[in-house]
Image (cartoon, rainbow, N blue to C red):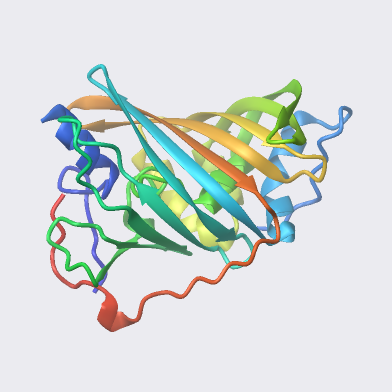
Length: 270
């Protein structure tokens, strides 16, 4: 059974649980050389990742609401050709200062997010499956870590892009670009495996424009991207900054999706 969660009753499976506690395709090769059009370079980054195949990934999601800021961190691997990945997501401490959260294992696949150690009444040996095409944010925020493929595919809708300059990032020379991604445009241009989730996000977010900072290496591969989202929860606007860092291209990725009998069929509490 697919667990579908709607806005206001648990849509943001991981993120809103934290916030609630606080308040209650193919493309041409990318080229990052100085003479390249900045928009073309950024919009070509998703195709460069598909050709690169796999990488390791680190994620962070910073949320601010009511003067309180929390950060959710993730680490794992991703296959950009198959659109499969695995992340270990660590939730922040409770407001009391105690760390009562077990790390959540997330498996990412086209159209689906699988979570283990979800808590909220889910047995420890079971997975929760969420259809990302039904989520109002397309899993850009829900899992507490933006799907690396979705983070990259958002750049297909890049506009008003400027070349900030070159810098070193973890020992790699990169070009820093800044601009705004149009959710609707990105959804129309996205690869088929990601299109449904981005179409959902284009309908669900209040604003189509998503500001970003993207860092590309000399092969046009995305090394780092930071998106800034906002959504409304319980009448309050929550600002979210999602950062994805990609490194060690070619790393082995072995993701095995759960069998049907290992997926929880009950109701998940927010």
